[in-house]
Image (cartoon, rainbow, N blue to C red; front, side):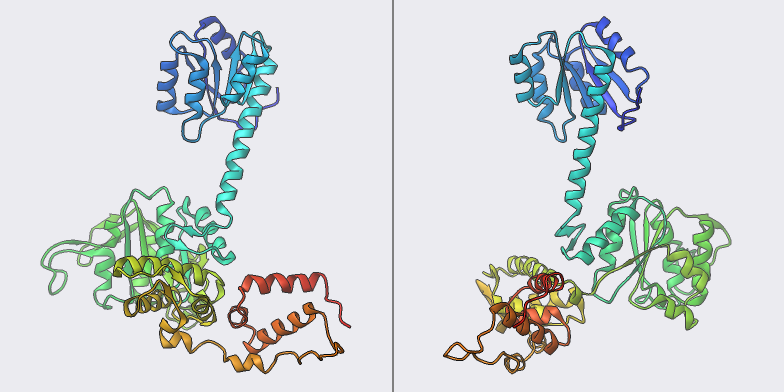
Length: 469
């Protein structure tokens, strides 16, 4: 017998005739599925509530309910399992009624072992494939994820890495410019991990004085230093069973780096002033806006600690490389701040969107958030225009005269010298990109189109070169 692909699945058999239930159980004895039996509709409901099922074999004649009613009830559940109806009535009407009620398939008594196994296998495999398709569909083009807002390909890659890394205990090392959302990424790793019910403890290694950071990480005992009037648990103890996030890890003192390395290797640490070893069960996530390998080469970061921490790297893209995510984020910030400030803004004007896309955003998402907040506080809508944005944002847009100087020569009135519109369009786009130093987002903003339009047209030019002349 060929083993079904959905090995390990749970099958619920709802059959009130004990002899038939035992027969079907014998049919499935060698199949890689576990089988639960319910003799009544009430028992079936209890079994589904208690342990669920990946598929249901349902007899339509039950002592306490109509089988079709129970079928409709099961199909009305969240993420319902496929239901295969068993009936002694082989009429077309019964089969049609069952399929209309949501049955995945039906079996007419009596049926052979192979028919039962094949029908169940097909139903389980179809359900599995449907779940996989739904998961893939959800994972593609997500516009938000665990607090992140963004649909750019670079962000989709970040979401997938977090999904894959979360279940592991391996250390995650997050890099990216300031303001790209490194702590948000650390929180996302924790939120989708098996440790989500445990604590998430964050330590900013750059914000704590050098002489106090060891105490912040490992804790201290009373009298360990001036001001230590009582025992204090550090982040290592507070994060027990959860996640410890060490932000700006490259700012950590070299001496403390050695103690952190021992903690990672052995799970043991000592509080400041104590000789007693304590055991910690934490998952480490680190972040820095520096180049960690450059810090290693400069002697400011231990190489052995780097390789202990740099197991699963996540590089967060700067906002300037995320294209239309800029407008998506701005819309969300505008909605939030308009509600907080009780302003009437409903959206962004096209010139505001163009200005936002043209700016390089050295401060990344944090700078964009502050720019929208400033505009909302100082103005009112319904539309947020470019003139309302802070001057530093508007100053980044390329001068209009730069592009005007590169416009194609006007067409002659007699029609001589007229060229195909596609050729003129291509020249204008390439000129805009050149004028903006290769920055497609800025070129798109200056031309009044979306970056995706330029990307699409350039791809078409590469695959089907424009005819000239």
